[in-house]
Length: 175
Ligand code: SF4
Image 1: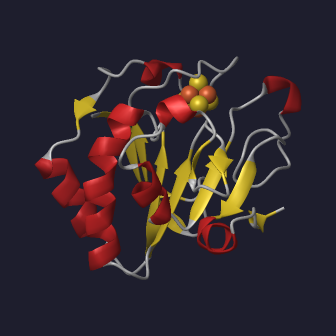
Image 2: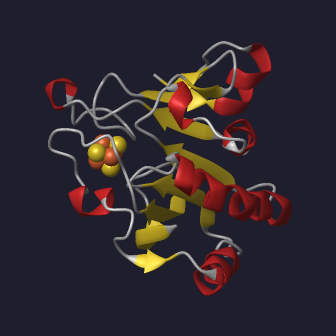
């Protein structure tokens, strides 16, 4: 997997001060996407051991609330495979830091997978289980609303993942 950019102190993409990792590769191609350069899976830098170690170290700072994954598309099958072992390490090392993920796919709250079955892999369920919050759905220009918190368009849901998976129905983290 490649990543497009990292924001080390981001307050726009989740609660608190966060590290935001923008991965490369996205097949949604939403109209007026905010980050078109990251559609290309080969854009940016390799997500290698050095950058993973740097993120793990920076997450230890007391003022960092957690990590947010954006893109590109973190849940493209190719990216799931790289993100799963990395996020598992974060979960083990920092159980109290939160993990937010932004996806253009839609969560099937009963199965804990994606509604687009062609995008589910052997990692999907376990990966989603590591998230605290999942902001799902594509950005839709016609539904854009700048008053919305932590999302761009009103079709997108800010989902409380742990509660949703526990009960098999959607619980929103924010309305
Ligand atoms: S899912 Fe995100 S990165 Fe992909 S095209 Fe849509 S807005 Fe852009």
